[in-house]
Length: 70
Image (tube, rainbow, N blue to C red; front, side, top):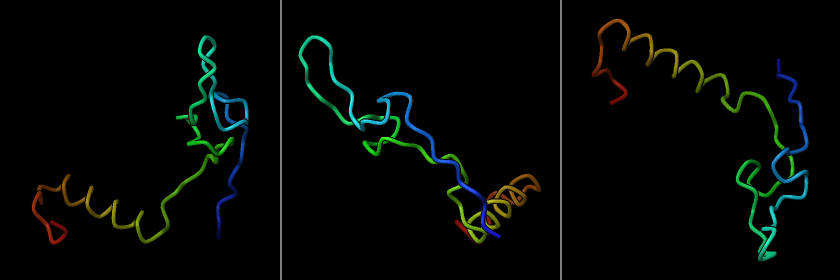
């Protein structure tokens, strides 16, 4: 089952994808949305990566600091 991703307009650049300096009028890519103009709030991990991350953390909490993934 896929999670529903909510796409919202970036607050930093107001959806334009760039920020303009007031004094010099120089344009730069927005650092909040990487120039896309919107942000997608949701998990970027797929199920396999999420399971691997949980296993690494679980092993670390149980004292296995040098497991098979190092």
